[in-house]
Structure formats: C-alpha cells, structure tokens
Image 1 (tube, rainbow, N blue to C red):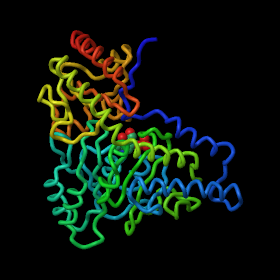
Image 2: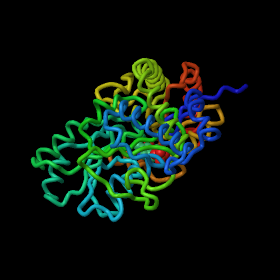
Image 3: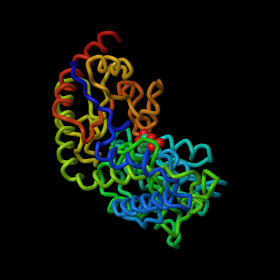
Image 4: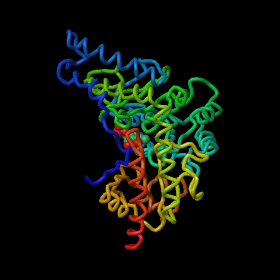
Length: 392
Ligand code: PLP
C-alpha cells in the first residue's frame, strides 16, 4: 500500500483505544442522564464526578472549577465574553489567538496585543495597553501554546504584568487557551497563574465535541448556553457522559506518558526540521528561522510536535495538494482557516512578509507519529517544492 503520513496532529488526533474502551459502556449499558434521580442517573453522576476529579488532578484545580463544554471553541467564547450578557469592559488578547478567542474579542470591540517575531506575547506592549485602558479591562486572554507555530507563552510573566497593573485582588482575570498545549505540557505548573483555562479532548487522543472551561474561584462566569442549569448554572445541556469519561481517560494517559512522548516526538520533529532545512533551499523554520540547521526547539520554547516552515517561492495550497498525492497530510495553518487564501493572522502578527507567508507549511507531529512518517516527509517535500516552484 502507498505509505501515508499524518503530519496534521494539531488539527486532531486519533481516538486512543483505551479511551474508546473506557467510553463504550456509557453509550449502551450505562446510558443514564446525570440530571435525573433514579439508579441509572445516579450511576451517570458517579461517572461524571469521578472523571471531573481525575481531570482536576491533571489540571491542578478543584473539581468544582471544571465546567464541561462542547470543546475548545465554546470554552473560549464563554471565557472571553464572561457568559451572557457579556462582562462589561474591554477584552484584551494576544494577536495570535485562535479565532475562537480573537473573533470574540473583535466582536466585543476589544484590543489585541502585539507578539514578537516568534509569536510570543510582547509583555511591554501588554503593560502599556493595560495602562492605557486603566480600569476598563474585562479580561486578558493569552494562549499557552500557539496552534500554528507552536510557540509557548510564559503565563507567570503575563500574570505578573497584570498584577503590576492591578495590585488589588481580585484582579482582571487571565484566561488561557491551552487546547494545543494540554497534550504536551504539565498544566499544574504552566497554568497555575491563569484564572480560566480552555481545554479540548480531541487534540490529545480523546473524542471530539467535549472540552472544558476551568474557572478558578473566586473568578466566576455566567452561562453562555441557558436551559436546565447543569454544571452549577454555568453551562446548560445534558452532560455528554461518554465524552466526559473519554476526556478524563485521555488526559490521564497524556499526563502519565508526557515525558517519554515529549522526548520521542521532539527528536522526530528536530530530525524533520533539520532535514527539511538542509534539503530544501529557501525553506526557513518560521520560529527561530533564518538559522538554517538550527532545530526549531532553539531559543524559543515550542511544542515538541510543532514544525512550521515557510517555503520561499511556493504556494501553500499547491504544495499541500502535491504532498497529499505523495501520501503526506499537512496543513497551511489552522485547520479552521484552511482553504482561506489570505495570509494567516498569526504569521502577519509575527512580522512574516506576505510573500513568505504564502509558502507556509504546518507539519505537526503527535504521539502516534513515527520515524517512517518523518522519512516519508523528507523524501517527498523536496520534490513537491521543486515541482510547485517550476509551475509558479
Ligand atoms: N483553540 C485552539 C488553540 C485550537 O487549536 C483549537 C482547535 O483547532 C480550538 C481552540 C478549538 O477547539 P475545538 O475544536 O474543541 O472547538
């Protein structure tokens, strides 16, 4: 069979067999609705409570802080708006946030903060924006790791800027979108300074359509979805019991295997990055680029699976088409924006010129990635680039 390599793990991941197994009874035998009061319902309540506790352990929060949502998008929307009606004031976010944050900030006439050339939030720019807005800031949202280029933010440093601006407690809440980071980073240490955290199960071997917004007390949110008052009035709708059980199982597995997975995948990524830089003239690593031969883990902290490159003189869409026909599935940037012709807002904010951003290629590895995937990419990318350049 023609070899295939999924190098688009930032888009989604395969449901892990252990997760599917943990979920299975909740669709058939243990199918109760936890909002009820009889035996089936109580069984579902126990399963949800257990999953909530296990998730809280991995996140480093109280079980009651976990609000289950339909995924990262909903969690981001609820965090940034504060629920319905929206929190008064001006929301602030970094310029490279996922659209689930950025578009909400824009819809609420909020403000964005510049990032540096590697995509990290500019702390001085944040401090001066907070000074300019004074007591009108409603929330600061800075992602833990970027979904296109993989850059990791230091949330303690962001929280320190907020604390300097607002010495009184409670302060303006810091929200972080940890959707991409959760597969790789220990949330107990990286998100302890955030009051709200968005998570999504399908990025780490869990099912699609389930995630959480963590809201640490005393921070509060209003519901975005109204109805039966589930999740202590913070999110209505019958709980997705099987999804919640799968989410907890996937997070626990990722946590237990973090060190080994990180070492193995980072080594694969570094071989891929170095191999591409040496095999393809005019290809630069987008983070820490311009230094051929330096793996993308260089000076800027990036997720172990992230390998984002820009290929001079190549059009991403044409490149992706050829790569797919050679068995490599990748993307140009965020999967939500694929098909969009304009340059990614992330690359634009990082100062990547439009003609360079046209050749953006996101190769993202995950825990299922193998050495054979990297070999295939190293075999097919150089010739695909050559053919695309010859056409344009
Ligand atoms: N935030 C980030 C950083 C993401 O990468 C994604 C998914 O692509 C989301 C939010 C949206 O999460 P979900 O697919 O669970 O709605």
